[in-house]
Image (tube, rainbow, N blue to C red; front, side, top):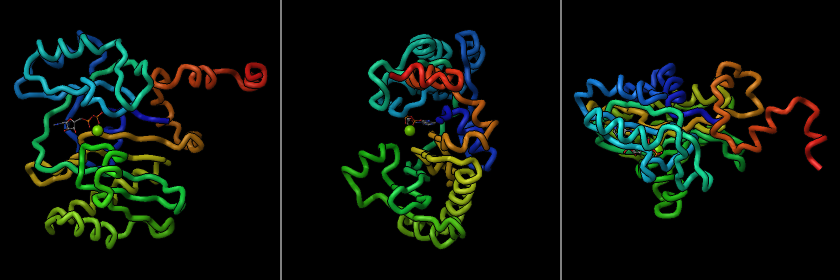
Length: 257
Ligand code: ADP
Ligand code: MG
């Protein structure tokens, strides 16, 4: 089960991972209310369970209420197609309004379960903003990995090794250690199968900030994650899959021939 970016960011904040301040709007009236006194540029982001929104018109920096209304009226209630979802796209029911961050450096960061090693793996790259498939094709040497021992978890020496490879200053290396350990704790405590922060940026205050976030919860562990499972947005799933999930127990036998 996937979370929306705005839901994932709320969970990041609970683990003291920095994200830009943001609010969501579901209607043009709400967009109007949020945009009424825009002073500084804000980023508007269509909430769908797919990446690639930036390249498909789903992310925009706006400077005025009119621009915010124009962007939102094009997207709210419509389907947004990106190269990561189905040809029909996914419906946009919410727009996230977010403070713009002054980006000094963009990184790729994820935590996932490596099936071959059967371990939790941290993946970091200096090629932030690009999709991991693209990085592995174009510059595989820029992908750094650390596998975590399930008993000891993520160790300080591992975050230090990553920080050294990325040539972080001592100050940044310390902040990276705190960030990566919080992310690891979030991953394990919430039974995630994927936590991807792309881009993870270093801002002008020399802090790590999660500008985007994709979170998937292991479906087999949802019974342990009642609060998170309530955040499910069926409209983002394949309609046949969603329908199958809502059939009463025992119905599968009569529908699958
Ligand atoms: P997607 O991965 O779906 O394209 P992102 O959330 O990664 O969407 O946004 C695309 C790009 O927009 C990011 O790589 C980043 O450069 C920029 N961006 C996103 N959020 C912000 C923000 N709050 N401040 C400044 N730039 C942003
Ligand atoms: Mg992204």
